[in-house]
Image (tube, rainbow, N blue to C red; front, side, top):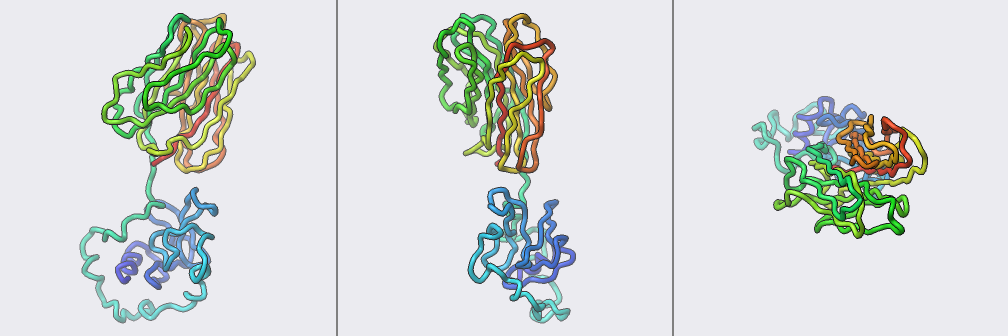
Length: 338
């Protein structure tokens, strides 16, 4: 399609040409579009980073033939190796305008981009944004509910995350927790039978209540937080997570460490810790600390987050308390972009 060729010429400063309705490259420099750096494959088609492909690369929308938007290495048949098809320069781009004419086609006369030439998904920018968080405390072990207020500014489609460090030293067995309608458990990490760190999520709807009540089967005390994030994948918001019971006295606790699959994740680290002798603990960290709270009865919880642009192992992060803790329950999770 000649529109494709004209647009490729308009976008790429040093193009080699357009063949078989697709852009043809000679080097990686010709595959940089909209701030995204691609690479020129042996097929002379541009590919761009995509973690969902086994190879980690996907052909762009302007690639020739059936390569367009296919994972690199996954194409078979006549498009598997197109290098021989592009050994010579087509007549239309040999320096003579030929039947392309001396001016671009009419549909490129305006500044607008034709609908079929819109920016492909593999070049789209994906950003998760923290919106707000609230905390709550249950100072007495006689309560059987944890009530968390909806974060300010929560709108339809936002991700709501709630983490609760709860329990009682009087427990003989681990109690149960019932979440409000619409909430999904990410992970519960236990120090049996005394305490648990429970993490839940939900996607906000147009009719969110002002608060959420998590009911427990026995009396307990708790420290908890809830946060709202925008720009998160609506169907599978959690990329990966890991919980850990740190059965040691310490002031500093390190994140368990996770390996993300997708680009531009936000990685959260939360610590629920118990200090029998102190009720006024304060915390330093983790990365980009958002909230911390002490329930004035030996339990405290803190969380923070950081954006991880490339898939892979999470950066090391930790949280340090002002007094030595008896033990801690840890959770690290990554939330996905749309």
